[in-house]
Each structure stands twice: as structure tokens, then as C-alpha cells.
View 1 (cartoon, rainbow over the protein chains, first blue to last red):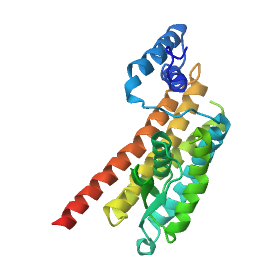
View 2 (tube, rainbow over the protein chains, first blue to last red; view 1 turned 90 degrees about the vertical axis):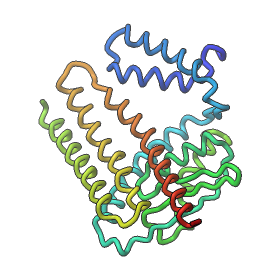
View 3 (cartoon, rainbow over the protein chains, first blue to last red; view 1 turned 180 degrees about the horizontal axis):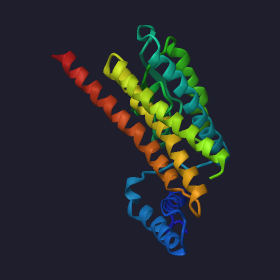
Length: 162
Length: 102
């Protein structure tokens, strides 16, 4: 089983994505999806250095819901800033010292930071474990860093147990 | 089509269009590269997200069967948008550093 499906989560994602692409219309389409779900992870095996195990799927779902909500809320906040007086903006580079020590989890954290409006991640330093990001308006960079750690990093650490 | 669904679809399209517009306004108004980066990356998340949901809802209710391609579009966007923003930001930093060195 482990040989056939080295990355069960990746296989499941490919299968669901294929089902979505083909609108899950026929048995044939699903069969092709299943074939791809087995083949692609096997072929791309070397591209996936030890991905950490998903320890707490429940926490992962809650984190995904939180990110989705934050995207909507923060979009409105950015919209207000973009339309308002620009001179009042305080853009800043912020460094967030990380507690997690896993490249995969760090990448997900960086992506979340980029997806939520108002912040774009610029670099994940994997020797010092620091995430640098640019914030559109951060009057208090320390508070922003603390918020990112509490809202996203803590649950991520729990999800991957790293 | 059911008027309630029609209303929701219209609202989603309007929201999507509004955020796409806001993203462009941000791109035009913001003063420097790094702040400008925030405009377009945001338009993709909520702007395209709302449009795509509207499309999914519309075709799921008017045509037979569910229409789920849109979800795949959303997944690909959410994976690729942060990566492109990240690469742009990194490139800008490198250029800036080279200018500072000279």
C-alpha cells in the first residue's frame, strides 16, 4: 500500500481535482482520475522530500475556514486603504521569527500570508527560520508578527506536529 | 432559473467585478513596487473567487449535473497566486540590493 500510494493525501487531491475538472460525469473519467492519482505521485516522487504527515485533519479544516474568512475580511480592509488617502499608509517589511521547523509547513504558512490581503511573503529563511513579509499598512509590525504566529503558525504546527 | 439563485449569482458577479476593479485601482494608485504588489494579488483571491463561484452556481442550476471545473480553477489560482507574488517580490528585492551596492 505504501509503495503504491506514497502520498495518499496527494493522490486524493489529484483524484478530486480530476473529478472536478471532468465534472465527475462518467465512470471512465473517474477511472482516468484514479489512474492519475496512482501514477503522478509515483512519477514525481523525487520532487517531494519528506512531506510531514497530516496529524490533525480537523485542525487543518478549521485553519482553512479561518483563512477563507480572513481573505474576505482583509480584502475589505485593503479596499478601504487603496481608496483612502495613500499618505496615511505605513508600509513595512516585517520579520516573523518562526517556531516551526519544516520546509513544507513553512511554505504553506508563506502562501497563507500571501493569500490574505495586505501582506505578501517575500522570503522564508530556512537557516534562521524567519519569514520576511511586506505589509501594505502596518503601524505596529510587532503586533502583525504576533497575529500571524497566533492565527496561522500555531494551528499549522498542530496540523503537522512539527 | 430560480430568482433567488439568480440574485445570488448576480451579487457574486458584482462583488467579483468590484474587487477586480479595486485591485486595478490599487495598481494604479499605490506609490511603489512593493505596495503595488498588494493590489493584483488580492484581486485574484476574492475577485476571481466570487466570479468563479457565480459561474459554478449558475451552471449547476441551469445545466444538468454539477459544474465543478470552477473549483479546480480556484484551487490552481490559490496555489499559483502566492508563488508569483513571492517571486516578483524576491526579484524586486534583488534588484534593489544591486542598485544599493552600486
